Length: 113
Image (cartoon, rainbow, N blue to C red; front, side, top):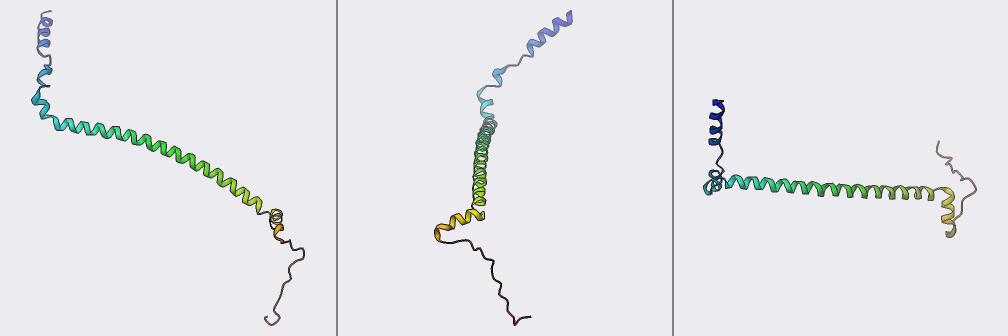
């Protein structure tokens, strides 16, 4: 029990005196460190905002790519449909062009072996 009585007073004496760490001269001495921590905090906040903005841009770009992909597929299917022989005949009929019914005539040169 006598040991406990001796420990309690020593704990009271070991109590940290915060006033000596937060006086004017200590704060002035640590201004460069405080500024360094402030710059790091600002950079950390900026990096978070930049990452958010970048992820929003990536989402927008992915959405635009999907829309362009759908548009490409639609136009491609339309071009394939319009390039079918039956559709081509319908398209050029108003111009007076008609499909040739006779097979082509092959010309050959009799002088060449």
